[in-house]
Length: 308
Image 1 (cartoon, rainbow, N blue to C red):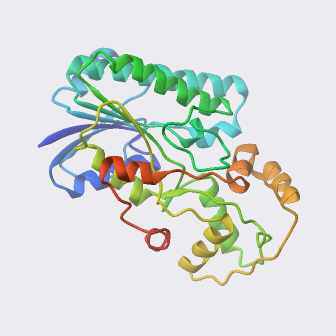
Image 2: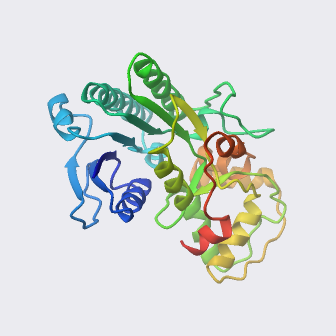
């Protein structure tokens, strides 16, 4: 059986990817994180894993492992803490990633798959982002992701380990936090909502489609490639809300309200980052990834929401 090591095992993406890997019955999954993923399987072994995990412990974990998924992420708490705490967390993220990558090279890991963020490209797109675009990070989180990407690229350049960097947009599905959870809460209020004139265009990706792509990466014949992935179905947040309400058997009514006032209200309630990702347009050229890899999203937005 193939041995895979996965960090961020108790997180939203981590737990979903573990389940996807175990479905195949061809993988022994080593799961690293600060909490056990609460998944019972004879083919799953949990390791406590954080920035204090020693090189020797990482070497022991990686013995026989051929693929590493590095998913550990704390994006959703960054708006709730001080700048100093934020910088400490991001510095820890960088150090942990580089330590894991170095030990992966040393241990003979074949492929290192790092889940980054579309925010490396920017927070607003007048035309769909391409993997060939120059990075344009706008906050400390995105800058940290870009710094990690660049250091990983430098590390693997003269090694035999392949690096895949995945930049997803907002990931939605059962258990998702951030804006998706906020949208579901708004829909569940059963009140008219002021989004009738919110006609931006955004790329999203469901947890099912993201895990499908990450799984596809295992056997992908690439060498140090960046991929931008989405559902390949760009829609407005207004239409996304309608689809959420339909999937939850809610009849939603929308009315018009000045967008600039809405942005201010969201900024006060949820923070500037959430406000930007709600009201700005942000699209991805997922067609590039489809053409390069042969992968296709398995589920439409509506189908994904029905699985939520």
